[in-house]
Image (cartoon, helix red, strand yellow):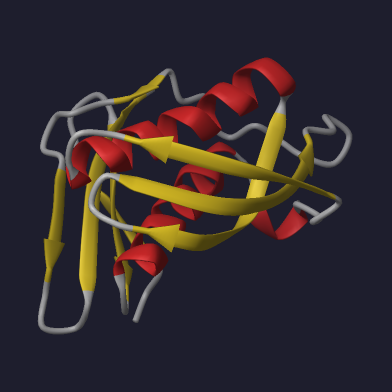
Length: 138
């Protein structure tokens, strides 16, 4: 199973993340977001932080999850690579996130993401597991 696929979209960029279960799909969506930003192979797991988010439904939870990590990137210049979702239901999640601060000497910013959108947002169970689709405003 591929972690994610890019979606063709006119002015923005979208992804469809897959996972055997919902936490893996959410983790892969976060991985895809940072992989769009920079080369995730060059991110070291030097820092870690705990993250808790909640929302009113599963789709909003996906946006809130990604928004929180995009906020950390924008304010603290944290780039992340591994996401361990410790506890999750349809309206909340608790995770441990691993990465490091952006180092311009080692990390090329490929594409800046302005925001996570609700456009074409989907979280769905499939025969193979779960899929999470989201469009990023770039």
